Length: 437
Image 1 (cartoon, rainbow, N blue to C red):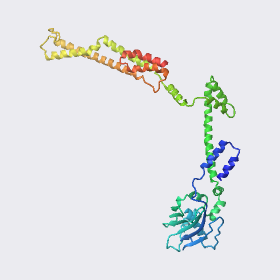
Image 2: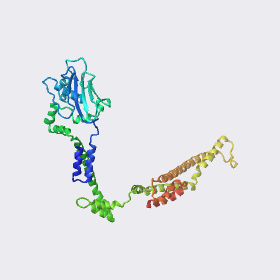
Image 3: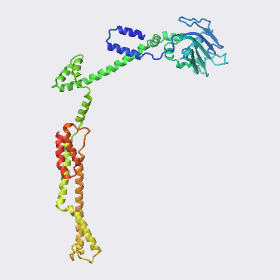
Image 4: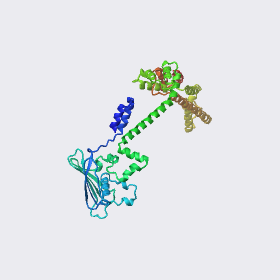
């Protein structure tokens, strides 16, 4: 069948791509399983304790092309021999399928129970010098508890399931009873077609047709996807109206009927190929680069400048020395508490300076100086926080375009500036230059 299809395909008025597609579908659907030899003929069959046969019965056949007629009275064992041959090869009996269980269970001969049922079929295989023997025996009381073994000259003994006959036995049953024939020619139309198609070897064509339908569906989905993207492509080409190539491409794809693919292919034929991916990646990386957000930069720099002004005000007014003065006064008060009878100053030696009135004034002064010191510490903390806020806005992207190298370096350098005043002076200008670039 496959050879016939290939011959007719070679004579068909189809394009080469179509022929190649059909051949590929046909080749993929070919049965990979092969028979262990050439044609197989029955030479004889011996059956014991199976169906209507009790003691061993032997039937000699002619192992060559042609028809063997087995003739006998009703009850002489013709059906038992036929079903025995079928069971030996397949392990099943098609006539019993769909019947009552009790009928299918009557497979053992009831009059000879001295041993296990056994079926032995002698085979003549083309190409072999000797005869092969297929034997099926039962290990249990159930019909399905059997095993089959093939003994073939030069190949030894192997279980039947290892002989690669499964596909052939399914497509071409070795024996068709009148029930099987009835199902083939008198069943539902779909069942009749499936049975005859299998016997004629049309299954390969059906599988190939199925693969071609699947390929057609895939191509149809691709076509739908292209059509869905076509409108967007046209819009993008319209936006490039100053580019002559875009105009030519638009005319090629927007013409009624089949697009002018030759023109489109000619337009893209000279475009770079080896560097496309790298160039596109670089352009995407550049387009993805985000510069400093100037609103955030201005807010952060203004905060830093205000913090600097607050610290400078405290320095000018002397508040920065408040903590130092408070500590000196606390030491003087402590000295006065330890030496209440000594009124002279331990630092300058002036007599009559340290008394209870001085101590009370000093304690009040210490409280005021402590509050001023806390304000100075808060101002210094805010200055450090404001400087960090400015530097936190500086980041280095994964990719810095060449044209932005200098302004980006000036901006990233702000992270290393330790002087808050210098940071406030340089940060805004560096960010503005980078944002403009």
